[in-house]
Image 1 (spheres, helix red, strand yellow):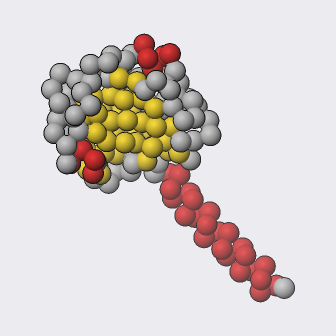
Image 2: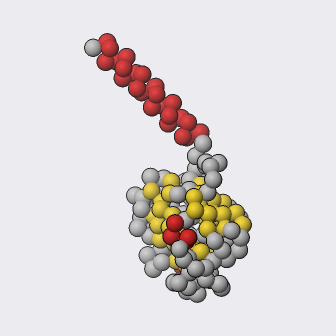
Image 3: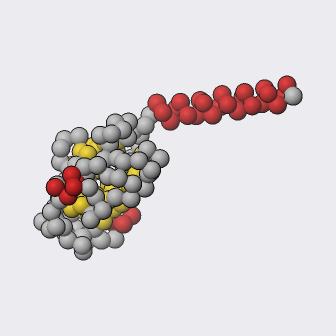
Length: 153
């Protein structure tokens, strides 16, 4: 019985150490992940942000139907209180879709104000087309520890 208790304590300490490491660095400094969907598509000039019909009115207020369906695309899934992937690299003209597959509401909001999804209830999506090269940091306004970066080439 004592051996099992020591083993359980050792496993618990190891898991806590791993969890503490991942909590200490929620925003990775690793290289951005190229968006596989965007690699095969052609950028579309003149596109602008759009929201899906399932997005909230706040997201729709930011939206414009001018985005081209033939442009490049990339998807960021929101689940388990995280953006997945948290860092992406895309070509100019690529449309990124954030889809909330979590059990609670979230946002995808650029720290510089470039885009704002508004409240995304579970199942809702938001699209934004990145026309200008640069680095765009974003976060969830409801859960500020959720962060990500879009790098546009």
